[in-house]
Each structure stands twice: as C-alpha cells, then as structure tokens.
Image (cartoon, rainbow, N blue to C red; front, side, top):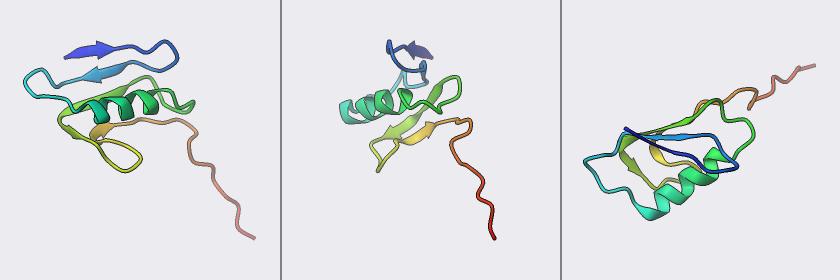
Length: 72
C-alpha cells in the first residue's frame, strides 16, 4: 500500500502495487479527495477504474454528505 497526499485533499490510500492505475482514474480520485465531506481518506482497490462521478473499485467514506429531509 502507498499513500498519495494532495495539498488540498484527504490522503488517497492505494492498494494497487501489482496493477497499472489508469491516469484518468487517478485524476478522478484526486478530485474526489478534495470534496469537503470526505472522511479521513479515500481507499483504492486493485480493480480500480474510471467511473461516472466516482471511480469503480474505491471506497469513499463521507460525513454529513446526505442531509435528512423532514417530510410534511
């Protein structure tokens, strides 16, 4: 496992030592790591690849990302 740290994001923990990480997927992970509601770090598994909005094969823990709505 290696850790990538962007100056304005949470750490990205990568479990991809034996596989190639797509450049577009890595750029997507960096953008996700900069979101204000990400909790502690982003975890990246060996099957990671570009997704729609978020990478497939990543774990993106959040805190207070979804607000409860009160229904009438």
